[in-house]
Every structure is written in C-alpha cells, then in structure tokens.
Length: 130
Length: 365
Image (cartoon, rainbow over all chains, first blue to last red; front, side, top):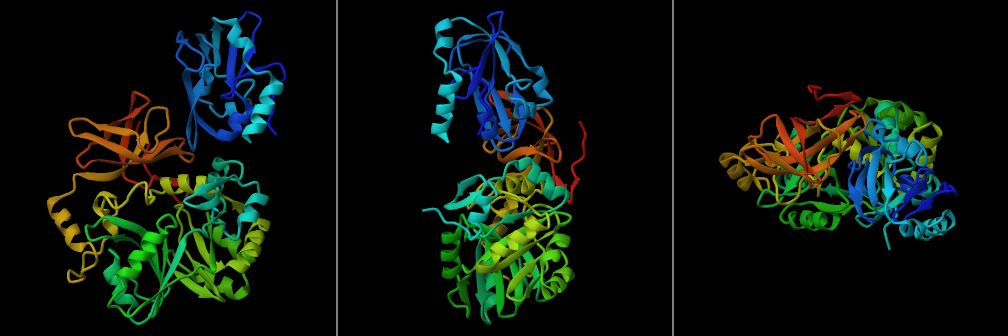
C-alpha cells in the first residue's frame, strides 16, 4: 500500500501538487509512482521560466529500467527546480512528498487546480490501476 | 496462457514483480533491482533461468555435427567436462543465436540456447542434422538456476550433497560435470564467478529454498540485464540478430577460423565479410555527461555518420550510464549520443566494463 497524504492534490498521471501559502504550487511524483519506477538514477530537471500547459511533459525521471515523463499537472510558469536531485535522484524514492519534490509552478488557472483529484479519489485511481 | 517455471510460486511468495518475458512469467525484481545487482557483485545472488532451452545432442555423430553447426569449434574442448561459448550462424553468416555448448561425453553434448528463439533454434538444429548420426532432444524435464557472485560457490556447496559438493569444488571456469542426476557448470551471464545448475524440475523448489536459507538473494531479470551489460556480454535480439555477424558484434574471438577445411554454416559468407572488412563494429560507451543511455538512441560519429545504441543502462557499479553501440568502424575515442534532442558526450571503450567486481574501463574524464 502506498502512502497518499491527505493535504495534497493529484493528477491522473501520478504527480502530486501542494498549494503553498504564497499561491505557488510544489510538484512531485507520488509514492505509488516512484514505487512503480524503482530505483531512480537520473532526473532531467524542468526548465526554469518555462511556460507549461497542463499535461505538457516538463521533466523526466529515469530508473535503471526505464525513462518516464513527468507532466505539468496544471498550466503555469516553472519558477524553481530541485537542483539537488541532479546528484541525489534516489531522494525521489526515499522522500517523494518531501525532499524529492521536482519543481514549483506559478499557476495561471485556479479551475485546473480545483479539477485535480483529492487524496481519496487518487487512492481509488491507484487501486483501479493495481 | 503464459509459461510458468517450477519456481513461479516461489517468486510470487518472495514478492517478485512478475512480467511477461517472451511468453514466460518471470520475475523482474523482488523489490530493488539495484540491491540485487550489488548483491551479485559483492556476495551471491540466484536467478531462475528455467525458461532457457536445453537441447542435448546425442550419438556418435555429435562432434562432427556441432563442428558443422557452430562458428566456434567443439574440437577446442579437449576433454569431457568443458564448455564453449559460440554463435550459431545462418548461411549468410547472420547470427541465429548465441549459446554455450557443454561437452559431457563423446556421445553427448548439451546446448543451452535462448528461450526467445526456442522454436526457430529447434527447427534449425533439427534441419541441419540431416546426414549426421545424431539424436536431438530438448530436455523440458529440467529446471535451471544460476547462482552468481564471489560467494556463490561457497554458498552452493553449503547445500549440496557431499558427492555433488566434491564435484562442484573441482570445477574450473567453463567446466561442467554431472552429479547424481544434476548437471553443474561453472558458467554464467554476470561477469562474476558462479555456477549454473541444471536440475530436475521436481527438485528445484527445495534447492531454491535451501539457497534462500543460506542467504543467497533472489535476483530478477532486471539485475540480470544490468549485470550482463556491465560484463560486456551481448543479449540476443538486442545487441545482435540475423542481420549482423560475429564480426560486427564484438564476437570475432568466438569464430574458429582454423582448421580452414572446417566448413561450418556461414563460413563462406563470413570469410567474404572478413576480406572486404565490416563497416560497423559493436563497442562499449561510457556516458561522460549525466543521463541514461538506452536501446535505440542515435550515436553521432563526427565525419563518419551515425550508429545506434543496442543496449544501454545506468551502471550501478560505475555510477554512470554505459552502453553497447554499433557504430562506424573507424570511430575515434569520443562520440555524441542524442538523448531527447540534446547531444551528450560518450567515451568509446572496449567491453567488458566490469568483471569480478572490478571496474575495467579507466576513468579518464
């Protein structure tokens, strides 16, 4: 059973989103997603100041076995990337909701955020995939 | 319905992540591919390789037949109990499969061929046997376990019967012997010391459990792939197939050209290729930038054209990406690899990358 924190929102493609007090969003991949990928060995960071649309691929996480795209859960501008992951990609496995965050976005459409899944719905989504 | 080895239930009980592998339900890993890889390099791990195809060549014509069938020469096997790695070629010198041939006695050789090519291989092996006094017998009543790593031999000996243990201990690298209905060979596909053991399907579940009890770690296909790639060992269907020959697959060393009157299948075409020279060769690459090399990525060689990565991965032992790539023959020491539109620098090296736990390609950065 994977860990799904109740205060986060989730995209179907297994990214999580945390709404920060300053209105920005922190994005990572879920515990379930990191478990599926296995040991991560490389993270291609998102590009700073990139304007992304919801569903755009903007980062890549690679395990020993495969590369997997990470999609922007909502539209916005990339305002920060987790540089530390260049040297320690395995942190995404060990702390997917904490130090393993991937990038921060300044969102442009509140409705897109409202449309993301809450933890309960995401848990059902994961159960259906398993 | 997928094929299941006799160890299927054992894999599931160990939380093996089961995947389809050319029609077989096989474990990809049991939690962490990386840990399994490291365990084989530093201690001992075991792989269920029961999906592989065992074919016995029996009868007085066995030697002559195999000297016709295989590009390497079984006459190099000077005594019973020796083994040889070889390619099996078609008439155009394309690689039908790679295999290990074990010399059991003058009327009995054993081939272990890939499971993905089973039907094709069996048809070919049978077809080519006309005119030789041999019998060809697939041995489906056997399972096979590979125990690999610096502690493999010691761990296996802890669970073998005294008779089997005495026999296993005497084996040198690429030697084999029968013992009480088992067949034990000091061979493998990881670049580490170890044994491959052919065992009746009825006994393999107990053997597997005994190995677990003495601390041998179960390892899946994922670790098997990264280990063999570090060891610079080709994977059939990925690094080579019928469109290439040993000469552009880094397997020149497996072709026995002498004696010249041994007319093995594919020899005429291969000699022609040798005279003309091949335009591509299979080399090792070490990525100098960050990223992961993967099968199918394009390799750019300045002034000489393009090549392709046939197998790529992140090397757990080296901590960087490595690959086998088929590139223009005259490529120098540096090439570029295109990954998601970016060009990254890779160093051309001669495989293997890692053997017996040690990194063999030097770290010039």
